[in-house]
Length: 438
Ligand code: MEV
Image (cartoon, rainbow, N blue to C red; front, side, top):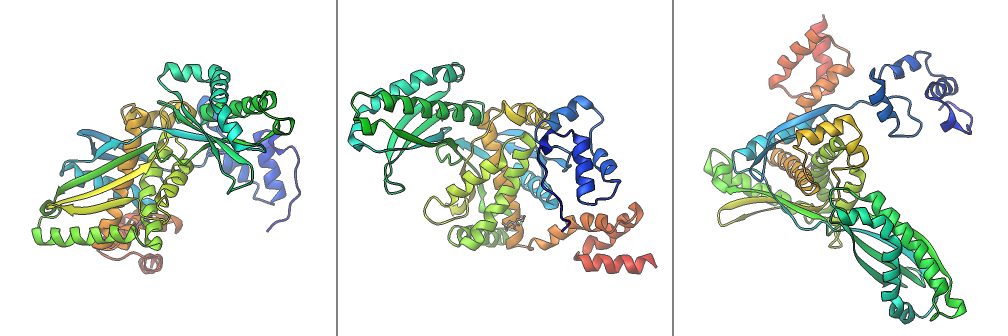
């Protein structure tokens, strides 16, 4: 690794100075600056929006913006915009959409939209004393947060519950204000964190001025105030279903396939090694749509994985079965997303995504995200229990291999034709090119 010096005040340099520093310190090629500049947008106003999304911006990092059409969700036909670096994901979603469009489409049901956050604090006094005074504290918390909650309340949201918890098993004298929120069309992270930080201040001064507390009980230490990305009560369920025979053109094959698929899903619900990969396949779809909408996919993933482990064992998030001759395949998971504010309202492609989705409400978007997860899961598990995934994956991967080997468009066309009915691997593509370059 090239050694380089620690730099102070890097963030204060302008973009070109930052690039210059990087090129100089890391002995990069002189053309690095031109290379980075070539990814900048010509339209300055849009470029400024992208640059302002992050600190220390040097250039733009491109990923494909794709679409998967033909999603039928609750009888509505929708096209899903998707952003992903994995070549097979969009194809998997498009395939699942077309397949289920002929079999009644996807169905969705919102189970709840409650978001949560906590003020973590320590207080050394008699627990029953703080619990006794809690209704009074609660009133003061609500009053002092009113300037922050007014607008959200006008939109039908706000703080919906405040609970005091004593958790000495974690740390002696440790308490939580466990707060529930309704954030309507917004993901609500800023709103929730602002309310919680205000709660921390109110709590501190309330404890200090409470006449019922002895002098030694007038101190409280607010450890932190932050929203939780674990939102088990902001949950959506999506599913597909059809008579088993309709799964395949041949009834016998359909039954065998349904049984195998149900077994595969069952394994994911009991074996952690399989569960993780199974859920990765679900998040292939959810993340791709979440990124396109400008939503925070790390928050979605963290909450989803925690929910997958909520029984004490990490399990596959989807479920499948055969009931009275009907095959069903479902996914239930927590999702906290917004359709206003943040990157969703700023990034031009996120705005276009919302237009393509028909300007959904936050609840509708929860459904679409879960549908994207179920669709990618369907295609992955379907391939796994039939042909295996490598066949499809490597075909999609062929383009990446050809690009990495810098072949001409004509050679690409010829190679695609040649590999149409053949297995693809890096060495096979290389061998093929060596032979055909002669
Ligand atoms: C690959 O990105 C995802 C899969 O591994 C998911 C799965 O195994 O279910 C195909």
